[in-house]
Image (cartoon, rainbow, N blue to C red):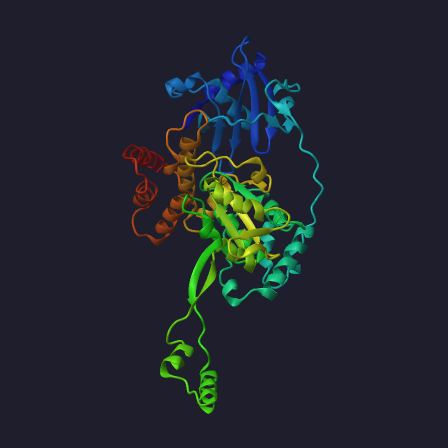
Length: 477
């Protein structure tokens, strides 16, 4: 929700500061936190501001002025003009539901209040000094591995990655190499790729469990991990149709290989010399004319990955049935073995790796039991940041259009994930649909407005939600 903030709101905010109703002004990264009292006998509240490089102001805030649609705004929002030193008669701020964040790194109250801050709700925890990590220059990378520089791995991890990749280059078949992802366009939001990579390269590796909202890029991140480790990738998506037979395989029949023609001729000649020549039907049986079948085990997708030393993604792992999780349970202990009916105990190839991903709280999901969950290295994959989203969109469309698309996505995100009352369901937000819209706009197949509305609404089943999303898009455009 975008609301106006007026110069008069700033003047009232300055008066409240003089009256001592503003307790603290603090920072955490780009965000500025203000702790204040609405009146001398009220409980403290907080408001958070952030100003982007393009001058757009965001405010994490709620107050009674919301009932009137912020027609006259409020003095709390006037604090934005104070902290950013703005003297305009009116500005705009986009309101976002307040996050559950009360830890700040720097007290800047002295600059605005003339005294240190009074921390009641906010907690001051200065940033710890971080020992610089030694980064290897790209010029030192082996030929073909230069793309790894985008992840800025520390030297100790990078050496492990180089060693593992070289090992795969020596052993993989051309068919396996053809299934290794390349040029994966995953932009890390934090250290999630580093954490996942190092867990896969422990002396006794641990499978990463990627957790995050829809559209946060978990599947793309797994492709990036496969590219980093130079491993072919297999995928399993959780569901009731994924069972032991699908993962491990089943018994089947295959014909016994027929005898070579030279051997058949030799047998026929030997029999003729002994005075008992082969009958025509005997020759036909030896040559395979009558198919002789044998029972063999046809491996399932998991068993193939386990024995061939590949990486497998178990997506939506919290949807799997107990029969399947019990199979994975034994595979992920330190022995790395799996019991296959008819074959017995099979030991995993030393280069086999497994990564799991899940969305939390979706319909049909179930909590992972503690013993199973403890086998994974949990990693939170955050929703895409605005800067990353713009970077992806600007690969397809001009900056002005990319900004509009990013604004639309953020508004949808707030409508879906607002902690104070979502107005849309998750079916109404899709990063893939947004990127498709950018792709189609770049091709000029229709007007940008028509393309955006089509891509973002036509896959939504609810007519009322389609209308809401369409209205939101038109308002943003």
